[in-house]
Length: 464
Image (cartoon, rainbow, N blue to C red):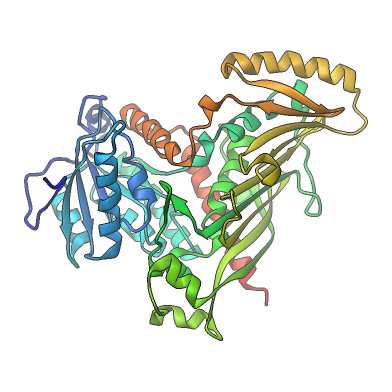
């Protein structure tokens, strides 16, 4: 029996919106099935990963609204895979409406109370605005804005959410990656890190670099990407896409639970963008499509597709100079995958995450004491401080690998993988719904994050 139904008629309303704070605070109690999800125009596999596991307070009925075609079909296949797997299968019932009026249908029927979106980034900000105006909460994949016009609209969206007392939140999975969590933890301990250095544009005090691959495996299967993914007017350039995570981590790690006001705390210094070349054969392999569609021909040079999916940003945040960069290669090296490099520079030590071939393409965290420090005294302080960290993260320990370098030993139980992080984000969001609010720093910091990415794009585009 199929695990989803296709409805083309309006059914009974299953979710309502509330405008008063008292009503909204009472609307989520953690009761089973009270959260009713809407999936809008799913065009990216992240839309399905939110449903890789079940949640007691989330109804099994999920209402999908989308245009007919490849994207929604792929989404439903992934949900079917979760439902039919041998170990811990889910039991989602996808109630699907497809048609050109999918957005209007969703807004008029309002069958759910939380809209989840991951897909065409060019449409996201407008989707968010209309959904919030209908009184429906939004959990959105990144990025929620891909240009400065989107950014202005996103600021309006947060105003609407505030007026209606509903929650708009983006999916920041990388906060749940264990080496990042421990990097943040160690940076807050003066005995280990000392004070945060300010750095300079030439020598940033915080650096985060991310390498991704257009052809990759998800659930151990080749990922087929939609053709629009390669159009930067729909997907967004790399400088406004993956860098969203990196800018978020700079804020979250270096200024934990502090409000960032982009008008006074952010100063853009420099930004750059460049292309990745994709051959017709590679394009067919990753999309299943024989020829470039018309909307991509503007980016084709001598039969090679040139995609602006790479970029870097140098900026100051509360006086600390940071640099974030993203690179997209076509495919991964043998035995490898997406990689992350990060360094935070303190007065006593650098905290460095490496994920290269030497680490088996698995992220590892290192503590590297700075030159000139009393190593004997530092090692004693480090051992004492790490015992406190181990109380919070049992099993975490240090392995000295040279005079001034220690590798943080991380038990396998903490390495749950990227796809599991979506469930962790959802669990946090469900708690925020029950609380009736986000932490007070989240909204201004989301706004600051998208200011950095979208305005960096403007800076980069001024260069030849």
